Structure formats: structure tokens, C-alpha cells
Length: 125
Image (cartoon, rainbow, N blue to C red; front, side):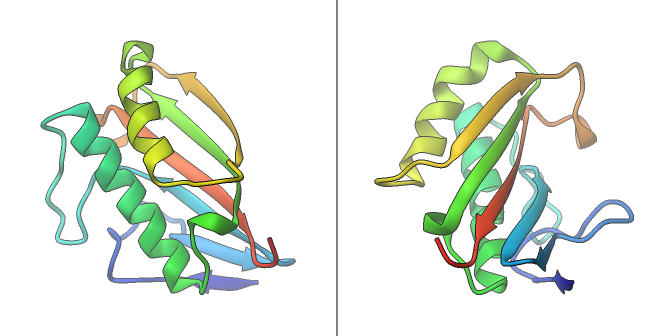
């Protein structure tokens, strides 16, 4: 197992890694709208989602991968009413073969954010 660490995404807020690589897969921990500088981006759900996806992208790049290698995503939303806007931004980061995905509403997320996204990427997709 290889631990993935990058300064281009926010540091974990607990005892976990930004990502781990094992068995040909990269497991990216849930990312929130926190810039690598520590500043939160929660002014609009679209901007929040863009920062989340930028963080996911940065972690994947640190692992030698990209969004085109993502096979599975999980989106956690504080409010399902934000689904359409989150989906629009999320979709703009992918092209062609979209990964499998589920989206769930949760009562609360770390740092009181509105969206968190985790992904699994295959090194050989």
C-alpha cells in the first residue's frame, strides 16, 4: 500500500490519508471545499463543488492519475435541493465514460460544508 500526499490539496483534518494506492486502485478520501491554504470556499454550492473537484483532481494527479481514471464516486450532500447545481459542476469535470456513482443526503458534514466527494480510480482504466 502506498500513501498519497500532496500540498496541492488540503491536509487531512483527522487520522487518515488524502489517498492510498493498492491493488491497482487509488482510493481518494472525501474532499471538501477547503483550499490547500486552509481557506474555506462555501459562498455558493457551485463554487464549493468546484473546489471539492479541484481537490480530488490534485490528489489524483499526485498519485499519477487523472479524472478519466475514476471508476466510482460518492457524493455526500447536506441538502438534496443542491443536487442539480452540484451535478452540473461535477459533470463538467468528466467526459465520455462517466464513473459509477451514488449521491446521498446526510445530516451533517465535516467543517459544516455542504458537499463532500470521494472517488476510486483504476490505474489501468
